[in-house]
Amino acid sequence: QVQLVESGGGLVQPGGSLRLSCAASGSMFSIYNMGWYRQAPGKERELVAVISVGSRTNYGDSVKGRFTISRDNAKNTVYLQMNSLKSEDTAVYYCHIEGMTYWGKGTLVTVSS
Image (cartoon, rainbow, N blue to C red):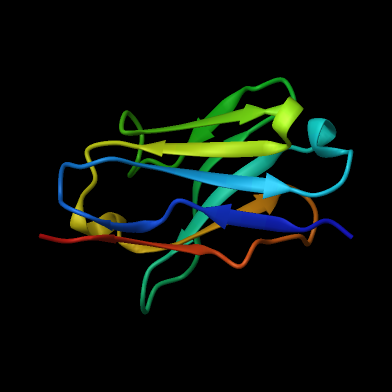
């Protein structure tokens, strides 16, 4: 059983930045491809970014050029740096192990003035 715990969400003004973290339990983190997803009220969950074991990255079209995903295998942690935030980025952000059923409980990001 793997546990994923997200942190770093909060209220930020449009144009601001936040960094989300997702800490994973266990010793197998370095072999997982990891992803960040988000779900806004009334909308389906969507891909934000993924990072492979070899640190190759892929991003959803709506966040390209503004968000950066990274990982620190020594800390069992994946990060999401979010810059130039917009009101439409408001959502609950979830951490996920790609190809497996493990999800975190999410962290709320609210972008509002």
